Image (cartoon, rainbow, N blue to C red; front, top):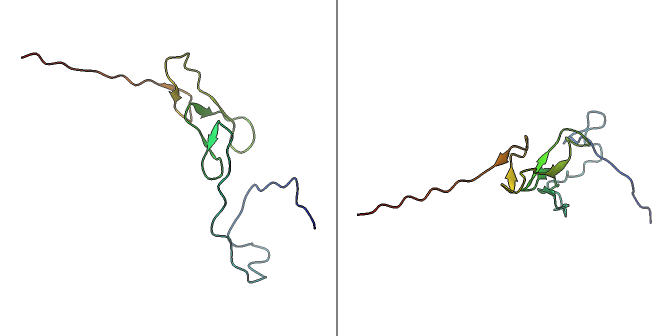
Length: 95
């Protein structure tokens, strides 16, 4: 049995510009659900999980790193890292 190791796929298309569908086999229409590290989510772990934002350094569009909100919030904008603070205002009307 042969094993396939150390493989990377940067880009895919539904039809090869070189060979077309030469073997006349059906194309894959879905992918398996990945088991993501804590800082990623999505079918292929392509999104930052809540509490993380994307920095533009590193492979595949950047790394997802923890929000830096100093305990004031657990959420931040996934692209900028700007902390999102929810404020609840309760109004009490006395009659």
